[in-house]
Length: 633
Image 1 (cartoon, helix red, strand yellow):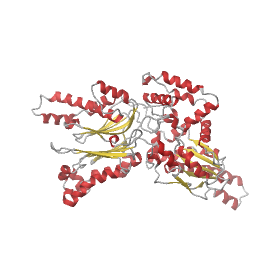
Image 2 (cartoon, helix red, strand yellow; image 1 turned 120 degrees about the vertical axis):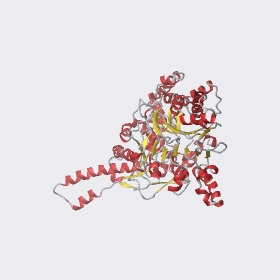
Image 3 (cartoon, helix red, strand yellow; image 1 turned 30 degrees about the vertical axis):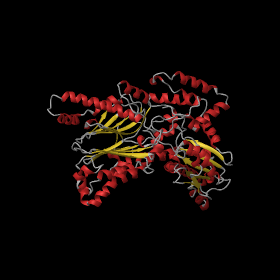
Image 4 (cartoon, rainbow, N blue to C red; image 1 turned 180 degrees about the vertical axis):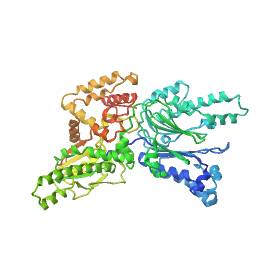
């Protein structure tokens, strides 16, 4: 994505189902769990580079011995920083006595992160300061082992205010009003209640409190805790938690907005945000890995029992389509094919934009995340060319001429590596004010690839959000090649509405499609539509979120997608470039054809999967009309 956006986040949960001595003997290292976590977090670094964290639970430790380890980092390379921290202690032991690294009992007692249960997290900060306190996993600590909770997630909730007020009403005093702390305390509240319930139930059955708490650990009702704590959540989430005594869970939202995949064998149980991570790390097949069902939790008991249980009623599946277009790595079997299809399906529009003149059209991609869609586009162009070749060959009839036939057969789509991104200029980690200063120098080009004044230059991007990089950098750079026309192709549809489930697209004025529509309304003397929609948004402000409708759709209704795309091209074209500029967007219909199992398209259509989404979009428009440059949630 040339306008890279942040999104929450990546998770990796690992449960070792055998004693540590098993891994030390079979894999010749007692650090099997640490090594696997390092691998899984590195393989998901695309999901978060603002910070990272790792937590570990050791089983069956004696009172007075540490059983929870946690380390978080906002270092420029946070994953490496975490594992350097862990290995520093291991290195010291190795220098002291290398034999101790094979002594699993010694390691558990003396070295952090040598337990059986791990939870890792990679963070993209969608908003707020990038400080260590914002990094997951979060800890809710208690002297009673079964009341300790460690939490990390890939999520965003739209109704944090409501949930916060609920906590205050029951007498809590949360230290901050954030979705993570609110969720932590919400689950923690019902964890406390479950402990108290079991304590009351068994207090007359055992002589010693220690025996009661062992019984509580064995019978802790995680399903009840999760049902009670999550019943009011509105948002998208894959929430992972560890309890101090060794139980664990990963809970997914009822619409399946955020992804979570799991795999189990006799040695391990693992959950990650992306499927290929498990395949590569544990050498498994695609078909052996399962997706946690929407509304369900994967529950891993300390005794090794694993079950997938419905927590909240499953709703219409609206898995985030942006995961398929951009966020997830493209080496997933299905995502690869979907991105190929996104490229193929837009070919008709591309051909139209260059007037079907492939002899004078050069094709490329910007940036690397669009590469797979580019291959799909080229395959689509090759299919078109083969159809044309067949027609021309048949038209030769009996007057077959070897040179004419050779000319037909050797027709190819012209493919070039046009743009090169400087990997050192990471525009995606800058603040809004810093971004503009960096984008102008983020790319360079391959000179001599375009015939000056004759060729069309077609570049595909996975999506266009703000258009900042296009206007300030890419179009100017491409214009240096002096093409007749520049066509920028987006494998995603126009982004028209804010996201509120974990993607950093929260303000209406950030979207070039919205800006273009505002300009069209003004040009057609239809400014009154803005005021009408503003009033209707205000009227819904105090309604329960379940009654709110997306009235912002009305501003787009007077215009076709093509009209808006044309205006976008006008707005993004710098005044000092000579080439004609056209922007081609994917259609909603083609998106759904390419990604049939991921129908979450609210940022394109305004059709949100949860009631809170409609409240957010209207509030976002109110903020725009009132000149407030702030998020709606």
